[in-house]
Image (cartoon, rainbow, N blue to C red; front, side):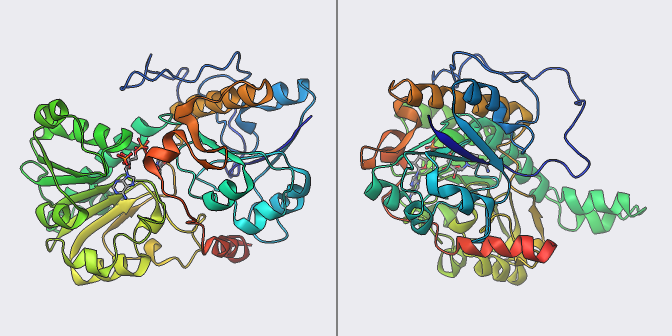
Length: 402
Ligand code: NDP
């Protein structure tokens, strides 16, 4: 029988919801590339319920306990006195979501001699030291595609809100003003701008498709080129590297995973190549951008705006400079955890656990590390190594807010 430690974000401050804004959640029948939605044998939750917070338990308790397993659910994940650290010594499986990541560093993996599976309820397993998982032959899996479209929708929203200066205009209304000139002095049309994505995987391609009707010029860079038919359909300009892309566009959207190759890709040198007044929307991972270089670029006017929902570390300490830098549209890490997405990734987690306990293969597209090497989506999109360095800083959030 297995012990599962599941790290989830806290419930809402006013308690776990008793009712919801809508009675149902609309779901696609199939993902855009033909991949099927998760196929667990059963689920024990109501689609549309808040599953990602501690009381939601990803809908797993009945399933796990009725099969004799032990489930520990906690939001306490940072610092040596965290519940996560206390429970690791005999844990077989650790589950967490990128929104509130259990940073599975080499040191933590060493504290968990029984650990066999690290599961990301979502997409993006950079919070796990993949090299340490490879070395220990631990399987790492994520629920590929579960929230890619959720994020793509968020990216389009953030591009429009930056370019059109939505957030400051909204704030003038709340403050009781009617300051049209203040609102429009930084407001532009997106039409005819050039927009480029770093990576054209599931999210990047979905962003390109959604932006096509806005009559913008579309650009991309990726390690693998898209099929010619897609390039033609969307009238895409391919760039051989990120430098070439950033020089050509007004808006950059970052949609690659964080791994050693992409850590701090957007540093002072890269930002200096961008047109003055460019925008960046980063919903991929905070660490792909150099924190202080972004602040400097906003202050100097190199960047006209920066938005996204990803930070490093998470939760971001109260004094993280992205909370107060000019012209930003940051939210906490929420784009991939809409109630719609939670329904899909909770079902995906259940599917992966069923496979694991029944000794059935986990879908190849869900695998990041398996058999002591990068596998499945991991072999395609990640590189070996570790991107968790500095994650201990996340402990400062609790101390500051205590
Ligand atoms: P995919 O695996 O479909 O796409 C990732 C793409 O990134 C692939 O096309 C891959 O290229 C490309 N890539 C990898 N390394 C590089 C590189 N060095 N330079 C350029 N491109 C690169 O994943 P998704 O699109 O579904 O998700 C992408 C990322 O978005 C996730 O890894 C995660 O970090 C983030 N994410 C954020 C969420 C949020 O809530 N904010 C939710 C979900 C995901 P190739 O395979 O061709 O080598």
